Length: 286
Image 1 (cartoon, helix red, strand yellow):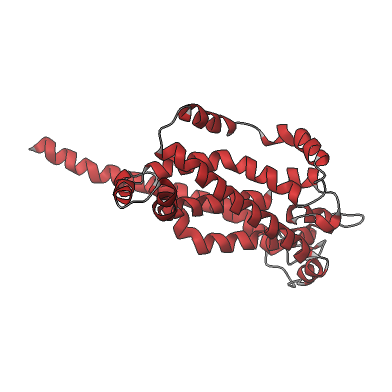
Image 2 (tube, rainbow, N blue to C red; image 1 turned 180 degrees about the vertical axis):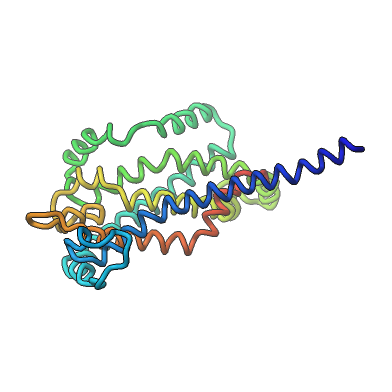
């Protein structure tokens, strides 16, 4: 009896210690991520040389809003709109293709299924920068260089392996009894996919949309390689247009960065519940 009571007493102590460590690590991570964000916001409201005269974490004195008006009046929304178009089209294509690919890999038995799935997983290890020159030559040969279309293909291609991998794991958690019951009622595979599997996969699709959307929104290497004309550049390339003529105007660049990250922050706030559900849903068998 004494041993049981001692074990029961140790249980809550271990739990409280674990929670304390978790909270400390969470607070440390929150501070680590908030400090650069606060630095960016505060210094975007300063004049060019105020950072040298004032502390970078002090409140601006005075608050200088002209940085934002200059950024907006110098074509920021053009970069913004082009990024929206590229990311939206790429995400739609990526989600459609990955859902169609993940369904047979997760729900059907056919020859070479494991080999195909292994190939998809292997493609996750291909470094993006290794393909810059081949993709540059390919887009040039196809006549798509210096156009927004040139970015959509690489964005979709590099997002597909991980997206298919995640969706396969997610779809495997959906009970097969649902499909079997639908087949008894006369549903074929095609209808099962659209009426059962796809609706139940919405949390996973939302997670992939947010994760890949952020990556595409911030992508620089392909955009810098495949786009040349200023009138076709996307938001990650906007920083180069706002550099000073003889000196780097850091506050105005921080203003561009602040305006650039706002859509992603809003997107995360709106869809954070779906993101959490999508991340957790695959952990428990249905």
